[in-house]
Image (cartoon, rainbow, N blue to C red; front, side, top):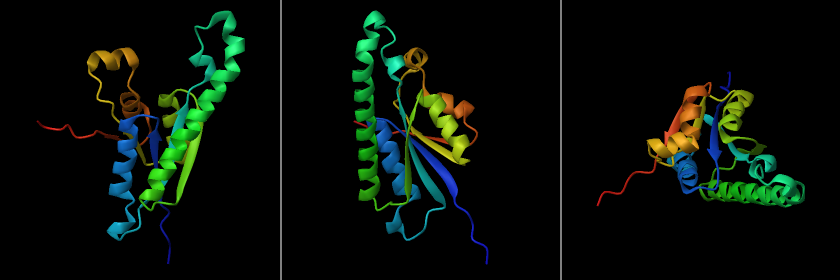
Length: 162
């Protein structure tokens, strides 16, 4: 009897509330052991750590002095993001998870993770920026929707109706 190999689902996380919501929503809908089924997916959680070079681009001559401090802070932040994601997974009884921290721009890191893991789905949260903010800041979810070589699910927190 042949066993089916699980498909891979990559979830992109950062230190934002929309990212946390997307991870929780994904675990509840695709990995919930309390629903009595084994997930069809293998889960890979990816955090894109900013490059210290990018973070201190405008520091000029002081960049060399500031670089080790910024690098240390970015490493600590990445560790906090991963620890929070691990805690969420444990609280939802999801244990078979791969966690990765990759340095680079989130757009590229997530698309490369999809290719590296041969993922069939990428999940990202949505900050809900308007058109102007999205144009200025760039949208990770928009970029991934157009460039990832798999299905992209953008998880939005429902708006509260007054």
